[in-house]
Length: 251
Image 1 (cartoon, rainbow, N blue to C red):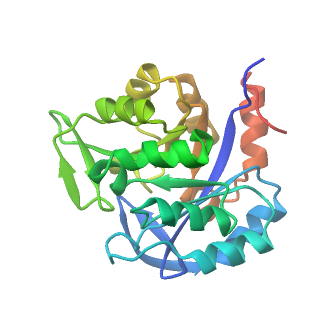
Image 2 (cartoon, rainbow, N blue to C red):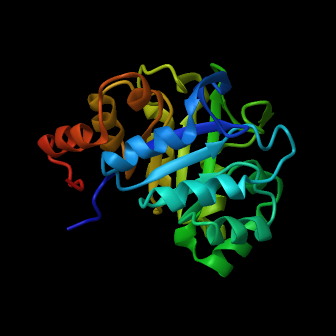
């Protein structure tokens, strides 16, 4: 029996406010991060991803006090990301209550950081964010919250991150992000086929069937932000739907 497939709500924050992202434009404030986290806590979710989408662009480090307050109030595993550039920040985030960290831009700028963190804290604590953009001809790897493109294959980058010790990857197709019209299945399929570590599908979920399709192309877990924020859909119902399709999930 394999590991259960996870359904993971995602909360985006900027300056401690809950924001709505669409194709990596996260300027719209939509609520309170703590209130949203408490809703997911009440729903009994197995895991929560909290991403500070303003930290890197504003040259700020992680918001440790916010993570500590959130994890003190909510007892589900929390994966935190945003603004990480060196190993001491990872240590402090984990000490503040995060179970895992997401590293994005710094994983490209300083790939050796992933190996250092995996060696110090264990691969299971290190998730690398791979954001990618298709221009009609080729894929580009994108960093700095969608503002910087690199002519580097997302698949090659995934291979490198796995080799350096990342425990899992969170994959986002930028054109799908926040649109609720489905994940970028082609991108997820390409990466999931080439790595042996778990792949989290992210960006674009608008239905339980979208989650089913992402698992079919190789995702180990499915993440969703707007889908849970703007509809009556719940992670529990998502798990029930996926179980009805034959997937092993936590119910």
